[in-house]
Amino acid sequence: MTVQTALQDLPKATVPSVLKAARLLDQVAASRDALALGELSARLGLPKSSTLALCTSLTVCGLLKRYEDGTYHLGTRVVDLAHAYLVRTDVANEFAQALDALKVFDEEGAVLAVRDGTDVVYMACRNGNRPVGVSYRIGMRLPASCTATGKALISTLSDGEVRALYRGKHLPQLTTNSCTTVGALLDELRTVRQRGFATDNEETRDGMCCIGVPIGAPVDGPAIAAVAVSMIKGTDTEGKREQAVATLKALAQMLLHRLKMLR
Image 1 (cartoon, rainbow, N blue to C red):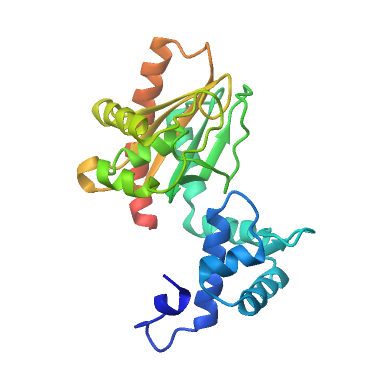
Image 2: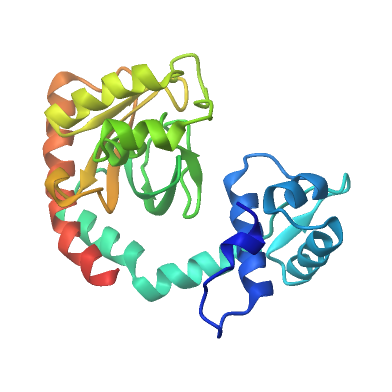
């Protein structure tokens, strides 16, 4: 679908150039690699001259960054806007208060994430005292198929919705343990639904394992977010895993009502 087609039947008060700029930012955000002008032009169905004008304007605003080879990626202004959004919604504060109330995960650290397409985006985090291989930060993205939060989130989708989500896409492989096929992912998601939590067994980073729990019951539709804890491989004893699952489910329940109020 071209931008012109997408703009049909919209309210008269909309500004087409703003909508086109937003579509362009969506394309850049969805790509793990910087995109060239020609590729952006093709994806948007716009002439190169129009696409260049949009890219130049967004670069001036700091929403895009232009590299020396002429490719584009998101600019640092996006981070500022994300932080402003988080301050307004107070998601990070709600997450911190819930962790403080439970008095948990000081050593391992914990994260709160939402799904954006086939990625998870971290909305709040608390890095633990022990290094686990990944230093989480607000706004950080990772593939949903590799992460405990991501698998917890997409486990609340139907098999058909998961297939549609990954249709025509390759599953990213961050380590040799990362899931590489949709069929294998679906098998794992069925297990996640049965037991109520997901795992990342060295799929994001060697030597690190995670447990994730969705926020929201599957009967209510797709989860609105997910929480997870990261641990060093070898320290995740059966007793510790059971305790982590129980604590994450309690954390998810504490956050459910708060996050619904903030939406």
